[in-house]
Amino acid sequence: MKKSTFYHAGCPVCVSAEQDLLNLINPKQVDIIHLGDQREKLSEAEKLGVQSVPALVTPEGSVLHINFGAALADLKS
Amino acid sequence: MKKSTFYHAGCPVCVSAEQDLLNLINPKQVDIIHLGDQREKLSEAEKLGVQSVPALVTPEGSVLHINFGAALADLKS
Image (tube, rainbow over all chains, first blue to last red; front, top):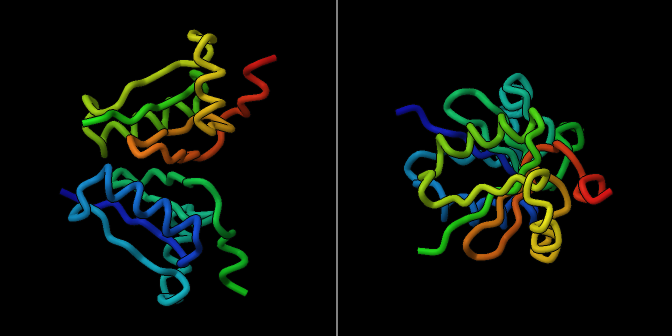
């Protein structure tokens, strides 16, 4: 089964959303990517349609922007 | 186990988010409330901290606003 990917940037909103999601979804089915630490993943996230973090990209490719921590554009600067 | 509650208003963003979430979370663990049809639930949603739909309220009481379909304020008018 294909995994979901949770993109975040370590912000309080991100950490809180991550905890909430991992209570709802099997953690083994979610890859977690910290865009502050893994800056090489920024363009990948952007191509997938991620506009802000925290965001969950589903196995089907849907992007769920969850609450609002930071804009992707701000992480790139 | 306490359930999550998914609030929506039938908007395209809501329907899409609902499908995505129910692929990730066991549908038996989610109550789905259409605030356009069940207007008596608007104040309950507001008290829980829902500001826009679609939104998922977790069993722990966290509110995850997912993408953006409509503001709760607009549903009340």
